[in-house]
Image 1: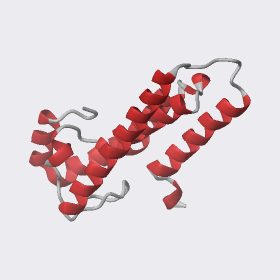
Image 2 (image 1 turned 90 degrees about the vertical axis):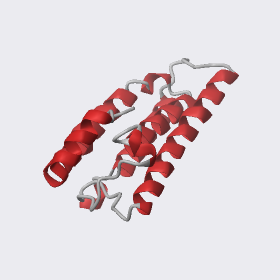
Image 3 (image 1 turned 45 degrees about the horizontal axis):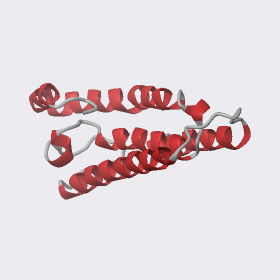
Length: 149
């Protein structure tokens, strides 16, 4: 069951909720206009790009991308020099983009709820493991690089 407690599974659940809301409970609300499609593409594409950049950098450093495992290295290069959590940030952008794409206006509150869930369920425990494992290196990195960007 541990494999179910992964960010992509949570993302899929939140995306499904937004899609269901847009399909069955739209209440006549709409983002409207061509700008919504453009914004949806920018958010979703940006989220995918962030996640791919982070995964590529972690693979290049020969460390794990699995959230419940402690990485063998503290990755501070590439996109990790700008954000400590680019994959999670990418997940949030993907959700935001799909909420706009689905025209799921009533699902907008899912975005901060998803961010909160990621932080409590994954980010804080991961940062605690990193703090214990990498000690002084983590302290310097944490001071230098923001959590989200």
